[in-house]
Image (cartoon, rainbow, N blue to C red; front, side):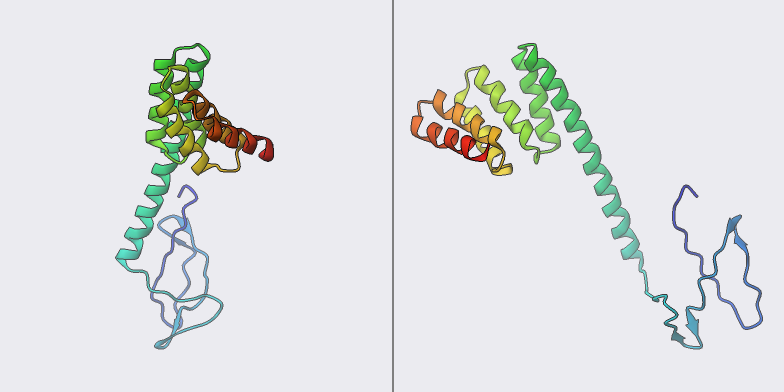
Length: 172
């Protein structure tokens, strides 16, 4: 049901009729799994699936769904932050970007956006830390080096700022 794969195994004996359906679902006869005491090799491998295998599979699927939901929620929080930043509501933007990072700490753009927000709020030290995280997550992204260069410049670290601005030009 619902596109899910169902495996139905039935013990049959020579002369038994192959059922056309099981619990209202059409059955496709894939062939003999075991002939006598030995598994067959009719192109269909025979494997043992334990309860632990099933539990691990279910847990992995649930974790993947949870990660996907977290990424989606993170993108929504980032969009709220972008709207707030555009309206110069920096406190609100900071909260939204922080929420986005908490939900998905692998999104370099969220760190970059929070860095820009922190810089706009006058917190160049924290902006530099977020920009450095952005660079570590996306070293080939020119914007990451621009953010780090801007934070370094605001802190008076002109040598580091120049290095990162040069990297922007090299990557762009």
